[in-house]
Structures are given as structure tokens and as C-alpha cells.
Length: 187
Length: 187
Image 1 (cartoon, each protein chain N blue to C red):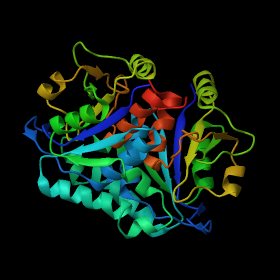
Image 2: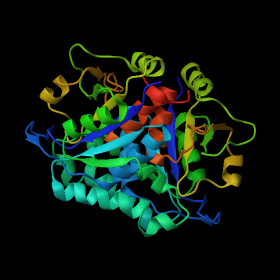
Image 3: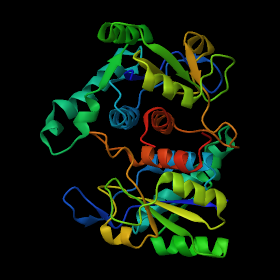
């Protein structure tokens, strides 16, 4: 079985008007997605932002629970936050994975909009993870989603969740949880 | 197909020391779970707390997006928050459903711990929802989980998610998302 990695990207994202922006990191995304990722056996959860001050905040949140005062308390939150790492850009995280695994990861985008070819169903990707040995790195966007150029650089794209619903505006926290359960859940 | 309802309970919950408490409502639970519930076709999402001041805050959050200034903007958040209703206790919500549906709902508890008999798998409950007409009301706890007495009053209990993982401390937001996807997702 291939190791799983998760990346949460804050740049280059689209905003409400389609412009390319760096979105703000939120502590709830750091916490919730760390807990989900840790539960599903993800090796590392990268929070990616080009803003040094936000990376600093992210490291501080992690340290508070893994080395700071809360690490002394009877809480398992530190176990989840241990897998979090802040990074400046996607390339840095891909290099990290390649160094740890010996081979580059299969890069998989997620999108709330349907995207051309290279779409792989959750079931097919699950099979590939279970029977393969290559690391699989799943990317999630923030704001109004990843730019098309970013999605273009990925090897495969997971289809939108609940695309036939008359409403499908899940939080990224919910989208990560559902995606992890579909790819690695104990169904 | 039976209609789906979701309830988020803040009392009677256990705290870290096993004592029975009313937990604090959070705005992120109102928003995230409303978006998930609306995406999966849930008819109504009840946020249940005995504290009048917290119900007042909940109604204000809802109104801000459904009738207030943000309702005028180009945003679909209001569509999600429209299905939110604040309630004082579980009985009030069951009466609401019974009045709307003509029959009482099948009451289903969720728990992060494994609970005796009356366990129903997600697959079996999904079949029952798809082939039945009865409303199905799924309850989620907060804090350190529902009291045993509360779980005792439910008709069925869903098993813990990822109980074999060496870490399974999902946020309630992630647990609701995964549960809804298993029961009503477009897999």
C-alpha cells in the first residue's frame, strides 16, 4: 500500500471574482484536517502558504500542542498535529516526499468543478493506493479553488463530491474528510 | 426514500472527566455542518442546546446569512443556513419531525466508542433509507460524547468511524461529513 500525503494550498487560489490570490490560513483547517489525516493514516499533512507570517503562526499552533504547555495535558491533539508541516510552495513539499520515499509522489488534484480528462474515480484511486507502492499526494484548495494552471500540473484529478446535488459547497474540512474516507476508510 | 434529519447535541454531554455538562455551541459547527447537510439533501439540521443565550446566537448567525446584510450578496451560504434550526432539547426536535412527516423518525445515535447491540452498519442503514419512507434522524454529540442514557433512548447506533485506527479523534464536523457521505453520498 502506498503512503498517503495531504496538501492544503493557499496559493495560487482564485477568489470570488476569479482573481489569483493567496488566501488566509485558518487554525481550524490546521486542527480539523490534522485530526482527519492522522485518523486515516496520512504520513504528513502540508499546509502550504507563501506568507512567512502565516507559516510562523502554523508552526506555533503545532508547537503549542506538540511541545508547549498543552503537550503536558492528557490530550491526544498533539498526536494529530505532529504530522503537520508548514511549507512555502508545492515544489518544496514534493521534494520532501521524494526525499522520504525515494520516488516522486503521484500528484492528485481535487476540484469542486468537473475537469476534462485525467479524472480518476475515488474507487479506482483507492485500488491503486491499496495495490501500489508509490506515495500518493492529494491536494486541496482554499478560497474559490485552485487555478487551472495548478490543476494542469497534477497527474490525476478526483471528481467533485456530490456534483449532482443542487447545492455542493462543502467546506474544505468536510471535503478532506469525505475524500480520505473514500480512499482509505474502513467501510 | 426517507427524509434525513441531523441533530447536533450540546446537552447532556460528557466532559473530559466524564461529568455531565452542556458544551458550548460554536459558529463553525453551525456553518460547516449546515453546508454538509444541505449538500447531502438533509431536510433540517437541528442545533440543540438548553442555553437560551446560545440559541439566540445561533438564530442570529442564521439570520445574518438568510435575511441580513449577507443575504444580499452573491453567496450561497444562506441556502445552507436556511435548513438550520435551534432547539432547546431533543424532544422538541422529534416533535417537529413528527409534525412535519406524520410519523416519528427512526432515531440513530453515533458514537466514537463501540456500543452493545442495536448497532447498524452504515451500509445497512443506507439501504433502509433508500428503500424506506420513514424519516431518519441522525444524532451527533459534542465534547467527549453523548451520555449512555441518551444513547439508550435511540433506536439504532452507527458504529465508530475508523475504530481500528491507532488514532480516531475526528472533529464532529468531519464525523458528520463522513457519515452523510456513507449514508447518502454519490459513490
